Length: 464
Image (cartoon, rainbow, N blue to C red; front, side, top):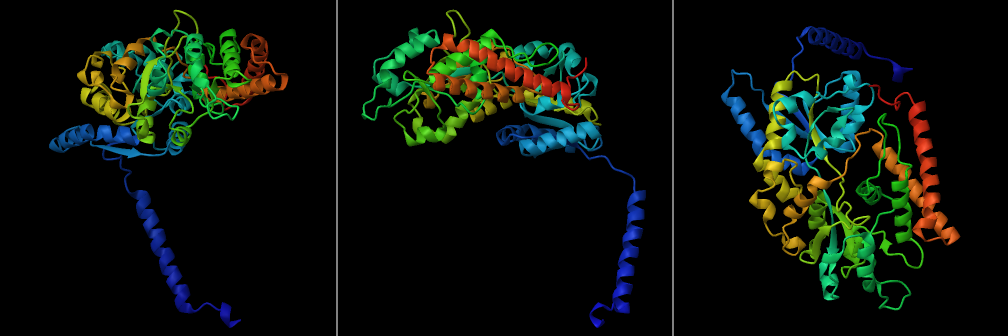
């Protein structure tokens, strides 16, 4: 068939192309492999990247000035959390190229802690931190999410205390004084008059607390505040305990029945109802900056206060979120990377820039007296938000660094939803009556997660 006949010229052309490709492949294979010209820095936060740019520029200027010296240049690359996680884990496990410096969040970094501690892909900084006198300069709880089996693998970006942000304009107009509130019972009792049904639809016009029942933030915040433990010393799930059952049952009692006081809300809820659909929300320091961007119409209407305690004399804060910077233990520039990490994480200028951009207070205690933390913040009615967070920073609870933490939180949310369904089906809304069921559901969830971890080779507990 003529249509399928190949002309001699076409065949000759293909042969030439194949020959060139073969010769090129041989030449490339014989070329010497070159290391990256400088330090590669992967991070996932755009706002951190902006804060770091002046320091990176100064470093690179010094690098150019020492063209024939040993200081390598630095290149930052920002990527999505998922891409960062995949590249980090694949590199650590297979030996493929990974950045020299890596910065990401506490729901990504601990995934690198799977397996034996000596095989973790980050440089162990424990001894360096103590020998150089850096460890004691930080609020020590900030290291928790990045410390695995007694080994510290990164410098923490923040300690992230949690306060309660509430609609001061509505609360104060009603003549309610929250300064005497100490416990959650005090809070709901004082705020109850604001749940009136003024539009006659049979539902309160407002609720007293925002609680996201399908995410893990608020439930984890409240469990940690109450001293709840999530994992044991072997890094196996240990969240089926009385403290966590008490919080689970109490929160379900807040969310169900004719006397419910909390409601699921999102920033869009506040946009739809600027008169206050929910009057308060637990607010980590970083979340304050998110609200400033997403809900500017609330400027001057909010105030911050310590979280109400679970019992009198109890903890008035919690913690949520965080990030760290670590060094790839295979990096040829580990020493220079360590110097950069220290500069970025112990710089007063970076601390101030990050506070102004993200509301995150530095975990370095020596900065807590800086004037910028004492500046009045118009968004929270002129309060010095920085000082309010700093006041609670020494009291944040201990957290886990388990790579299974996010999975455990998902199981606990499942227990919460099951308990809420039980309460509604059986019309049981009293926290004390719900506690035995809460404990049973947590035990079932804990057993399922333990079974998953112990069965799965990849998820098996790390050896000591």
